[in-house]
Image (cartoon, rainbow, N blue to C red; front, side, top):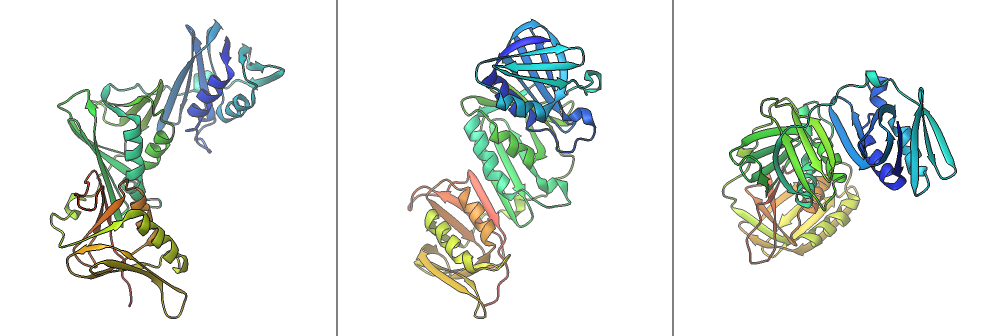
Length: 374
């Protein structure tokens, strides 16, 4: 191999491809990044059997070839190289990387040991990158962080024609967001379950100027692919049954409260300063206000009252303050509508654009109240 590439493009491509490399690979070869040069293109790929990443950039290819080198080391070197053109050239079992007055020589890894990457499945549909990224961020709020049940670490993607619904739950809360997309097969209807951490990682590296294309093969229903701005990722789907959560949503809530979202988040932040770890924040609703409080008589206490429009009977509910803030922060609208049945049933949170308008159901957040002692 003998090629010349732009250092900035090379550094960006290596950094993106190596982000999925495991810190403790199952075999040494999985710590490598595969470089393939041919026909004016340098392709870069990484793979750990669960997920893969592929990228390509333009290159001046004098001698085509394929090599595998340590990925993280190459990423560090690429980041440190000076701006401008750099050259990569192999010599027997080594590859030299030169830029400006810098020169590095790396040992090649055995290319024959590198596993074959999975095929990219056919397109399933596409959506603008910003919509996709925001949907992941909103849904990932309720993904289980520490849980033996792997399905609770996943995000369920339900697709029906041009409608996509993402759902997650950690048993204490549930997040659901929906959006429209352009399907490649309008008659497709199905449910996919994928690791929430993988989706978060993909969303952080998305180029928001290009659409995201999802790929899926119903004949080989174990893999989902994501293509965006010349970059392609694949991830293994989770094999398991997602909890039946649809029944948790209530058709009619007898109690509604409408609150300014930013005021509520700020009040929670202040009151929670005196709350012990895992201790609840209490919310006492009356006709025109809600009083937030934390702590008890034997400890530090805090109280704050803010405006709230209440429709229904007065009620007192208590929540984990972190779970409460995370759900509220995922809402885009200036107002939040809390819909309640009683102090023990899950409360639904929805965004609302205007005080006298209707709530949006594009994002729905359910949070189970905590027990509290007066």
